[in-house]
Length: 348
Image 1 (tube, one colour):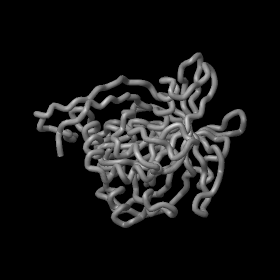
Image 2: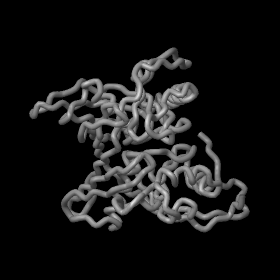
Image 3: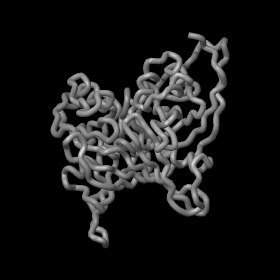
C-alpha cells in the first residue's frame, strides 16, 4: 500500500484523562452509501485503507499504544446529529462512553449543535451498539459537564471461572454497549493504582483471552457485539453512604483493560454502564442511588440508573454516566513518502 496520504486534520479532546481524537473528514469508504453505523464499522474493519489511516493516527510517532479516537460518519437517520466509528490501536470498538462525552462537549463548544448559554442540550449520536445521547450542560456559555445516556445494559453471566497465572478467579460478565468481565482486583492480589498497572494489564489480557477462547460472551441479539472487549478490575473506596434523601452513594475505583492490553485512563463510560447493570442486578444500586466511579488516575464519573427496562428478554437498565471533557488541541498530520516507519509502530 502507498505510504502517501493527504494531510489529516484532527481535533483532540480528553475525558477524565483518556484521549479522544476526532476526525471530521473521515475516509470515503465509511462515509458514503445508506449504511447504518454498525454496518460502517464492518466496512471499516475490512478496508485496508481505513485500517491504515486508523493505524497512522494511533501508532507512534503520532499516537501511542493507548490512543483512542473516532471517525465521524453520517448517522443512521435524521433522528441523530452524527454517527461515529470508535477506534483504538487494535481496531474498531462497538461502544465508547468517554468518547461520547467528548463528542457531546465538542459538538456544543464548536457550535455544531446549538446550545443555550445556560441549560442542557441533547447531542444524539449513533454508535455501532445503538443510539446514545450526550446531555451537555452549559453554564455561562461554557460546557460544565456531559451526561452520557447509554443503550440498555444487562448482566450476561455470573460466576464464570477463569484460570489465570495468579490462580483461578470468578468473574461476572455484563454488557454496557460492549461485553466486559468484572472482578475485584483483590482476587488477583492487586490494587487499582498506577504502580500495579503493568500487572493489571497482564491479568486483564489473560482473562479476556481465556473467555473469548471459550466463547463466553456471545451477545443474545447481535453477533457483531459478541466477545469480551475488556476486563474491569474493581475495588471499594469506602462503604456506601446514606444521603439525606434516603438514597445511597457508592464510591468504587476501577481500571478497565480493553482490546489487547490498552488501559483506560478514564473510569470507562461503557464499562461503568456494565458495572451499573451488575450492581443493579445485585440490588446494590437502586434508582436514585449514585455510583462514584473512579479511574486509576483519579478522575471520576457519576453514574446512576436512568430507568429500568428489558433487553433480549432479560432485566436491564439504561445507565446515565456524567463526566467532563476538555479540549487538548488540533493536529495536522502529514506523511513523508520517504518515511519507512509508516503507518507507525507500537512500543510499550
